[in-house]
Image (tube, rainbow, N blue to C red; front, side, top):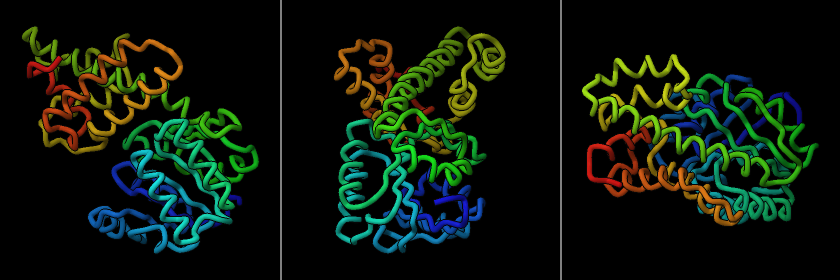
Length: 292
């Protein structure tokens, strides 16, 4: 596999997956998106991408990029691919955040069925997916990683982190620890600004320009100042899932993560308040209630 024109099956064309699929198409590849939700397929088709409901309907592209939301969805996808004889002879690149255990188990199933597998979770969110500036933590057999790098370069910078499946996911777990904490810290700080009688809209650019600035403050902060119906680029539910993966990994390693646990409690409180499908910036709303 090289950077010649590839037939790519891109599974999961939601908020972040769709712009990633578009970047691959803009790079000259033939892309078919796969998503069970009609609205997602309609959005993709409206942008000129072919779309299918299941992997069985998506053709025999040599590269399968997976951007589903959860470990259970990854397992279901492989079940469907097995039933459709749609695994062997293809390279599967798992770019979802599913944790080391899930990608190792998925990789074993896929390789047993005749596929090459690369573990390549991403960070940078929708903003960087749209500009092709994601950071990609790639791990897996050196030959397989090298073969997909030219295609993945259309999505961002590939950082090769090891030859074992799960190494990329382990890095992403650490990444999501910081992302979870930084989002909640930004929300808490902006809520504090308001409680001190300041205008958070005035405070935000001052904080961004100093030592307290962070990527999450700059990216999520403006949306935190908007209302509940702000554009959804990453759901509260995603950070409930991701912070849970971090907590599980920490427990398995015997590591104490009190700061992560406090941030996770905020995401869980937001979910319990009915904000699960809202943008993760809405975690700021837990500071307007009696949430912990």
